[in-house]
Image 1 (tube, helix red, strand yellow):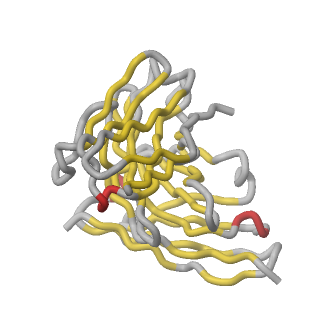
Image 2 (cartoon, chains in turn yellow, cyan; image 1 turned 90 degrees about the vertical axis):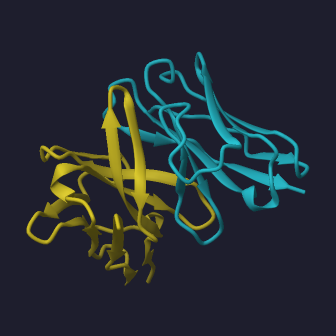
Length: 120
Length: 108
């Protein structure tokens, strides 16, 4: 079965750090585009970051310079290192596989999400 | 930054047709996708490449595109279709994914 499972969320103080993990099964992380999407309480979906199969990475302006996306091919796992966390980073963070083609980008496999709360 | 615009809410009676629109300047160049999200659950892909339906998604879900607007249509909406729906596409470069603000569909 193709699935992803996120972990690593929790309560962290403003300015702190946290690393999220996303373990994949049924497919190879390094052969796919992998994305992080977040959802603040009561709000909509917000794209956060993507890592391409070739290794290129891109970030939303709201997290650029603070978050780093990476992967461990031997563990078939995606990561999101989050530094200098702010209250507005509080959200459920989803990991998703992104399929792409000619002018087409969409997420077909989603995890259940992991909750990050930034508060003192 | 690029934006996709959706109506905040749509209401229909059971059995009626629900239509949710999504507008964006790059939609003539980039395909759109639609996701259904029920409370406390992860999003589920219901339409991709404007009109394609993943396996397991009921035939009552369909998508269409015209110029800068894409539309999700639910024909014969059922109570179980009550959820938030999000459109998603990419900017004209294809580098940055963007989501619409979401539409709450009420079936009552």
